[in-house]
Image (cartoon, rainbow, N blue to C red):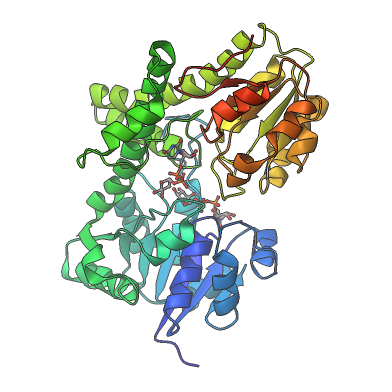
Length: 458
Ligand code: UDX
Ligand code: UDX
């Protein structure tokens, strides 16, 4: 079979893997190769046990793999063949030196740019898929185009807006696709080529073209706005707990205002995930580096509020369990940062677990998909934590249950059976407001939701 275009994606993670699977599935005329430096990851992509859990991903990969979708560790060969190179390597928060704790660590990105240059014998379109600080594309273009061989590259920014757990739907029916380029005839031609690719399945009017910095900044802005909504509703949840207002009623009432809208207003133990905190801190660093102190402080408060909400959840547990959890068994229901994923990066469950361990509680963690990651994340704590895939066994003999991930299965557990097997008084701390609080109270539990009056027997 001859292909019209050859695409390479460097980085087979949560973004690169699903995105390329959908491009291959929707564009049979395009040959898609995904590479990664991690051989184990590539082997997993080539097996029946994919390295990430995402509803609907298995089917799409199975349809396209071996036809026009390939996973490989041979990045050099991939680069040589490709017309378009997507870069989706990780850009964690810098852990050292200037900007440590806030700036993005661009070492993998720069290394990748140099690798692309080393293995190219003709010009290519290079597409940033990773979230990057504003003006990174320009720096990358300088590295790529500073070759003495007369090879010209176009660097585009095409940020990914998918959310984990709904990645396949977000990719197949995106609200929009954003492609930024240099505003030169070559830049515009390059972004049109990538726009045409997406237009195979995305309605044209949803493919937005812009200059490259607008595209880069739009991604950081979108994540900052989303996280800000969560910190705003979580701030109100603390006020609700003091005033007998109910946060779900408040969220519903304000969400009916079409200017506000109903989505992303669910109060919780706090937001997690690999992006929100990292991207906001990155925004804060950028604002600071331009001398915009007020802008930096404004956005930093979104992260601080989230940290406070997570700490507040544990303080509520302590205060209501007679100010001590030492030696008490506590079942943590859910370790993924949200439902329908096995990803545990920045999970609020991690903060809660570590705080409970610091209080000498005996924590047992259960989760339908994230136990493997949880074990790795908590390697350092040894016997202080137990893992059990069965929520009933996890709750056996526990003084309290803390719901930290909104998995649907937790809504329908037999809570009478759980109550009977627990120490008394038995406590439920519903960090996601997904349980039937009145029914739990009637069973005998002391119930502590987020942003609602607790239901207490003691
Ligand atoms: C990525 C980016 O990390 C993040 O900046 C953006 O906001 C979303 O997209 P994700 O796909 O979730 O996030 O990252 P991850 O699952 O860690 O995957 C990155 C992959 O790149 C890893 O598999 C890693 O092995 C690979 N990688 C990293 C390379 O192949 N080469 C490198 O030089 C560095
Ligand atoms: C986010 C953005 O949504 C996505 O567009 C971007 O590409 C990457 O970052 P993700 O982190 O995968 O996606 O998941 P998201 O659904 O945004 O959830 C983030 C966190 O907020 C989770 O911990 C989730 O449980 C929490 N959340 C979300 C709430 O607490 N309440 C809500 O109403 C929504």
